[in-house]
Image (cartoon, rainbow, N blue to C red; front, side, top):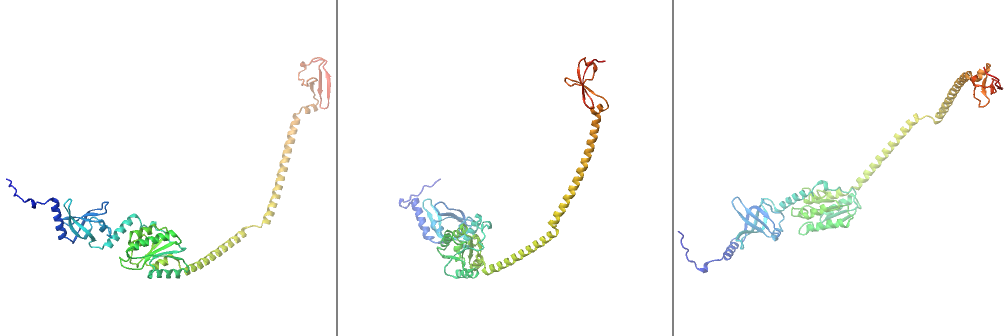
Length: 404
């Protein structure tokens, strides 16, 4: 059985908006500034640029928002699963009645924000291949000029100039002064690298400064500086801090020097060492040439020993020609005699078969006076036929009187 509601004065009834406003004012008054530690989850950034996420522990969670003006100054990027300490105030979003934590600042728990930002940037640039050795270029052996991007005052520029002048006197140096720490240092370094690329003249660029804390060196961990070094058309040597200091610029540059002084020694050769090497090269060249000459002389002498006198060769050739001529003459004479004998024998055999030889033995050849055909049969003749009788010597004309 449902009990009837007790009558309530109309003046004490609140609208939803009024209730939410009272809750919001109470929260803003009671939780004006709170520090909360928790794990980030469901982190997202819509086009507005505000950061929306939840902070949770093992049992509970609370919705949180960090407006764009506050998130833009964070040196690191919040991610899901990251444990952070935030400062802010608790409020109520009137429209939906949502309880929210409005975050003004954030620090990663257990590690400094700068160190975390550095590790995040390293990871991202490494994934893009900016640290890959294959994209790094060799430094020129003897540059036309050296470009230096550093502070105008300080030990770094003094040390670099001292080393360059000592190692290679007269080497042109193009100095582009910049701020190396503090607000505006990173954009200043980016512009300096672009200027040295645009105006030309330098074949290698040194970007660096002396030692300092992580905060002091932070400009050389800036993503903009890293990308400017990677985009440089001129090889870049990074020389930031001391040997133990490793910045993003060191990882992106074509060559890392442990100190600015070492960078100056890397980019220019030692003149005295070059002169010494030239002397050594000249000595080596002379030795090689002399050895080659001696080798050729020995080879020429060896060839000369095996080379016969051209006059003797000609004399031998003449004797050989005479010998061959005699042999050819004898062979020709023999062939001629043999041919003559064969021809004589053939003539004799031919003569023995010749009708003329038969005529010599008293025979004659009878031919018709007309046509000259040989008469072989007496029955073919008629009385009165004119004939010609061929004897061994001479011809007789006769006329047939009769045949038998």
